[in-house]
Image: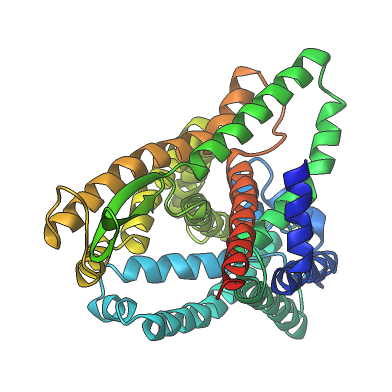
Length: 421
């Protein structure tokens, strides 16, 4: 407790950290206010009925930041932005021009971010029209006039752009992971009500089981997320008394954090949303029947969980290749006169780091995938009566909290070093 109080005092005394925390809290307040303002033309009850009985509602709700059911002006949230990010990261592996931009450093990343924002707008417009058309075809809302339809679509699109802007502001001036921070806020806002309603239906044994499972899941998330392998490196050009100076490269099992989980959910939600739209329109009976069978197939909890499991693992490895550039790291180490003991500099070092990171990511990816579906498995076998929380939601919440903790501790450490400069 004494260490905690000292850390809190240090945080409060540091103006930079204090400003970042207050900024993030201000974004949280504004975001929750916007999520309470309804959009004209779409009642919240209609959206609940649209996605009732399918996994797409839960997925879209989580990715949007938990505000889809409110039918607010920020209802579609970050889904278009995340889908746009997925598109450009996938295209970056097959289009040489985008791959070159990614290698141009900060300027190249800035251009890719600009393209991502631009594509977010048409995706948001498309999603708003898909939701409206699906609701209209199913008789859940009445037909809107042209101006009302433009206002509704424009409002939802503007809300999505504002959410994207908020995420970038948090990344630049606050604490947290930007988009994942906003998603966490939405998930947290729904937890108290869900737990309260579920506890009323649980008996004493189920409550104890729920508490133990929750403790086990949170502890395991923290343990694996914080775990790292430290690959020792030596600097031949920086000599101290006793030999070459040593340092290390930290490699985590979950190198990309919770992003594979968010990407997997966004990736699986978009086809389901389009499927709902095609079924509601009923353009062609054969196409409608085929699409409905696909939706029914995806609604099967075993199939849905299997897809989430595979996608989380796939995106974990994909994100590793995007984030952890072993060739560049090995080249930088060689330029600095650094080496891993027993490994030749250059290509051999890159190959060694790649092998180590892939082995660790295998463990981390399987862990993330298992935890993403574990609460649903507990529901299927009867340990938990209803869905109190989702595995993906738990991963996002714990992951973002740990990221905030890491950022704050890093800023405190930098401040302590600056006193001696």
